[in-house]
Length: 329
Image (cartoon, rainbow, N blue to C red; front, side, top):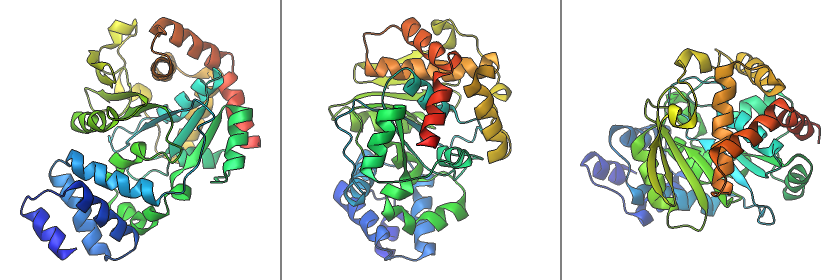
């Protein structure tokens, strides 16, 4: 690792194969915590390259526990986290709204590293039991239209960096990797990134693959559609800037989508929204994200139609019933 660090300190870049090997060695616990922290810090100080991110992704996918959900036309809705905005669990509620419309969702998630509550924190607070058993996850998809893939259950390699990431409590390149390494390789993905550069990297990587995808970066820094500003959207058909007004939506204030100061706070907000009692701002944010997820699956669908389907799921309490089924199974 010393040799790699010296190269990186001299502003050299890693090739895709070198990046893959380093991460495999990290997973094998070949390096100490100081080296790990230094390695992660490099990529906070300068942009990561496509080859480096692709190599890290190759390593994690190779080392992951695979699961075959190819019988289902699933979508994953997930952000990098690390945007420092402390919102409520927008992508997680969005996932249940989409599942409530009848679409199959294979949600990949983890505990929070740099915010109050991650998707795994939220589901654990509701009593969900994490599993990597394929038959169980298939049963979840069959009965609730959604399954949850808790990253540590599928990426044992991440154990080697968990304590260091938690101690740093900062966004690292592992935040960038999470959305790219869903172990079920869903055919549809709505991904959010905390900066525009990462969105472009994702686009370079995903445009080479046979999947439907949307990559979102809010222009004021959110890793999801926040309605606090416009957002950049990348799909296989190109890129565009979309403003709330283009969608018939009002711009909202950051304070209107604050997620609280604890997992308990976040869980209360989550339950209020999924029970159909959210504020107008909270509802419109999750419904807009859900509408874009539905459009990723079927690009011929208009935003208005997708938004209407999402509203029926949320206010018809189908999303709530989906959560109850998942936790009960």
